[in-house]
Image 1 (tube, helix red, strand yellow):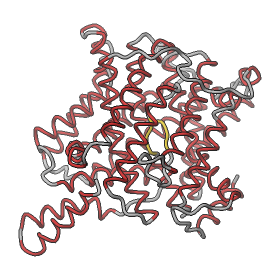
Image 2 (spheres, helix red, strand yellow; image 1 turned 135 degrees about the vertical axis):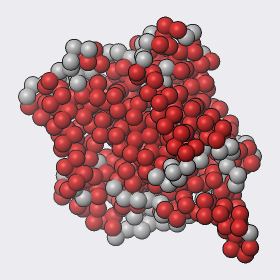
Image 3 (tube, one colour; image 1 turned 90 degrees about the vertical axis):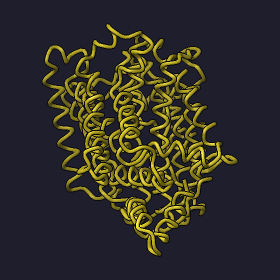
Image 4 (cartoon, helix red, strand yellow; image 1 turned 180 degrees about the vertical axis):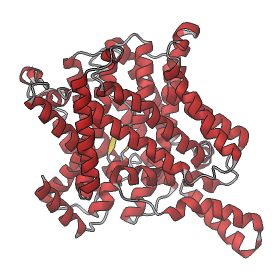
Length: 514
């Protein structure tokens, strides 16, 4: 593996293929498979965590993984290749968003778990996808008005909340799974979790850029291999699974549309819009392509179309993956057709149930160890975004602190909403992500109001992309200057004079891209 990694990294360092260049087939295959490696662990963890929380059978879990990979491939091709005015035509990999994990689990448990819960989730996912797709066709002014709700203090808080809320999900798996937590967990599974985390941390410390980019995947493989040698990883379902399996629409039944789950998923999509916007700016900076409002709109249309397609094909909401934005930076391979090749690989993997069965056989301790590291990195990305905020200002500190308190309430008093709130409303509110994000948005409006300058809409997106990419790959992907520019420009414009006017003009130019 080290030899392959060295070859890939070395070949990438010498490459600088333009974004629209179609590479020879061998290079397309090699670079495309590299994207799949960097993406794979993040792609499969979401259906495993959601499926396990809803107590799905191993066969149903295998189907979810296949459906996810299959839809990821289609979504990535739409985003990179483009279909009409849908797709950014940039090297952006699409994957299931972590933002949706906690809300989907809350929706599913509120619906009773099992496949019945999936139907409610899919109804919300389809609706939110169509709403996102429609929103991206609105005039630029309407788009900017919504994005002004998400300055860095809000996006940083939301991403921090997301990581903090998801970490207990990983820790429960590390202890052997949610049913064992009340009894103190399973020591052997905790040992596997600790070993997996240690392996990933050592790899992140001493490995090269490419090895760090696939550290989570290697941790899953290494931990599972050790568990198998010790007799704690069972692969009986692999032999029973088919070699070929096609994902069909509405496999688990017709979706059910409930208002509160739909509202919750709409909030999720608002958050993912900021992330995709940031990733679009980030990859545009890397490949040397100017990003205008139409490019961002096309990227969001692809998000919406992929999310609606995910609901149809038994998968979940989609977003541009920051991990792969970092990989484009590291390899310097800028061709969007490499991502198209990666999409083809994912479609093929999504048609092989045996491959998904292997993934579904990962012991819970190994999965929990890897997931805890990944979710911790997500929280760190939020903290890095908050580092760009003036937290010496008491109002900003209050926004962050109170929002974190709201986010922790469902985990601290888990039975409150079930016992004292309407069942439908409970599925909406019994989520730390929802409460924390809502609190951050509302408190920011109370203390700071809407951003006074349109340039504020670009800043949170770029700051978020920089933090996510740097956290996932160990390298900064977007220069710090653009994220800081709006604040500087605002100060300049407040002073007046030639310098202030120039700064304000620069701000307006940056805002037009959003």
